[in-house]
Every structure is written in C-alpha cells, then in structure tokens.
Length: 455
Image (cartoon, rainbow, N blue to C red; front, side, top):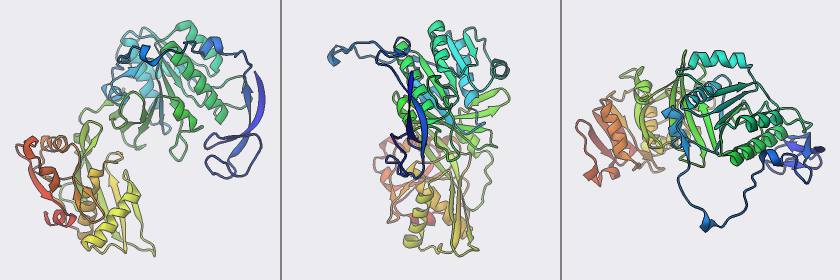
C-alpha cells in the first residue's frame, strides 16, 4: 500500500488535506494531527481477505427470517444484546480501565466454547499465559474449542481467522491492533478506524460474531474516532464504581434489539456473577428512617428494580451554591430544585444540594423525578420518608405529577419487596382494571405539594 499524509481530528476523525486551527466537524481548536494513511490500489490488496462478493439482489427476492443467535450462557449479557449474540454482528464493549471488560469477554468466550462453538480470543495486551491464568480463575466448564493468540497485526489476525474459521472472535483491544501498511502508530484515529473497518467487513463476509473491546478517555467517551461507534452493530458500556463490586452493562446502540435493557453483575474472585434480583442488592444496606432517602421503582427496558435516591441539603458556605448529582442528570436536578422553590415554596436559594443514586446505577427514567424532589425536600426539612413507602412520578414545570409507563410492572416489584405504600400519579389510576395488588396501598397525587403532605 502507498501512503499519503493528511491531518486528522483526534476528536471526531474529520480529515483535512492541510492543517487548520479549527476542526470543521466538531468545531474543536487545535485538534488536527498529521498522520499517514494508506491508499489502497485499484485492485484492492485486501479484497480476497475481507471483501463481501455478494451480488445485488432485489428486495422482494430476499427471504426474510429471524437472525441466527448464539446464547452466551450469561442471561444478563444475552438480555442486553437483545436475546443473544447475532451471527455476523460486531459488538463493541467499552468501559473504564480495570472495570472488567476483558473478564466479561473471556467469560462469554469460555461459555460459548463450552456450548460447541469455535472461538478465537485475540489478546493484544496480555500474553497467552496471562490470559490462561485468568481463564482458569473464571472457567466453570471445559472449553474444547477456545483458541488464544497474542497478536496485534491485523493482517496476521485475518490469516488466523481464515485458517481457523471460528464462529466467534474476540479482539482485546481495538486500540492496540494495527495495520502494517499505515504509517501511524497503534491507537491513532487512522489505525482504529481502518482496523475496525477491515475486521467488521470480515465478520460480515464470513457470518461470524465479533467482540471488540475498546478503551475510554478520561471523559468517559470511547477512545478513537467517533466513526468507530457507527461501524459496529452494538455498543455496550460496562460501568460501575471502581471500589464497588457491582457492575452495570448497558447498550447505547443495538441494531438487533432494544437499547433500554440493562444487565447487573457482581465482580467476584471467580469472575463475574450475574445479579438476578438487583432490587435486593441495591436496598440491602439502606439506613431506615433517615431524612433524604427515598425508594423509586425504575424501569430499564423490560426489567423493573428498586433503587435508593439519597438527597443532602446543607447551607452553602460560599457565595455560589452547588448542585451535584451522582447517577442522575445534574441539569434535571437543578430544574426540580427550581420547581420546589417556585411552586412549593421551599427556600433553597442558599443551600448546597447533593444527590446520589445508590449502587452506581445511572437513572434516566423520568419516573424518578418525584422521588428526587421528595429526597431534596426531606433532607431540607430533616423529616424522613417512611421506609415502607415507594415513590414514582414525572414532575412538570408547574409541579404537576404526570403519569408514567408500565405502572403495573413497577408496583408489582415494590409489593414483592415488602413495601406497604406507594405514591403514584393520580392519572395512572384511571384505568384501574389492570392494577391488582394484595398488600400495597396506593396514594394518588397530582401535585408535588400533595406528595409532601402524604408523609
């Protein structure tokens, strides 16, 4: 391959034939870096290795059917993937260093091999002996068809794939592999984009499933060009507090399923253990009868579970108040605080407000609005919300409590865990025919003030 020199934006991957101060793509300043990229000849150097030679066909002539899926043996991972690993798909797993990305991928590879699939695990950061030591720790079943190799040259990896013809390939990680025909170093924008593109084409052409493990920057974004997330079929984020044993796997892109599903794992000495009932885990260390603590039934995809919202309000010692949130949108918190000040009459203008979602979970469900508002009000008044009360509802700018979706699923989860009362939006109780509860008492409210007066 011949090479030419271009300037590539390190943030968005935009190319420019000359250096300019401001990137025309992401509008960032001084982000263009000079790199050498390969110019493939007209006949295509990699055509025989990765090209899909299928001829164009009419849409009406294509036989529609369900995609072939492989169960990984990890129900939590299968749920997030949309029901299993699709043959011919490429999934990107990203997360902070040390969070457990390689452990998750290797554990899935071992289980897929035990199920009879041929798996190739390409480790670019660890030797095969190091990978073997980790596999011995997490291995629960024999893996007769799991192949390990330490390699970072994409051309050599392609040769291994063509020789072994595996069903599943794991590349750990996409930031360390490189193409020898490119002049830039591994991890650069050009190398990551070109390597991911070639491997994706190969997976599509051979109909094999592929996992790519990706690094993240200190800001939490996937390292490399933004186009990397467009190339792959599924983007999974593996999240969790560094000093907590619990991990959360969520999909932000999925061409074969929902992006609302969430999987919960616990990191143990024997690998990742699946958490089948997250509600009990997130509530087991809760302090009862403490101000600022509120329980909310949230919904991630089709899965309900209860999380604890903790609020702390303290008088500000500085000239400017602070609103800090962990696991919740800080802008949404500021909006709810403004509603409490304007519509409810709480004097919070000189108070620092801190919010925490226990367990390392990030809540985006609007049904948590009312719980957040009550947690802030409870801490400000120093009046606890009863420990057997759950709260859910979306809050509008007029302090009205709006209805939420899948109310029956949420209420059943709260009743199963022994809660006695639940504050719910009044509009959710209009079609009461499908709400059948044994012990859970419902307290309907239409305004935030009514919810505050309920305890």
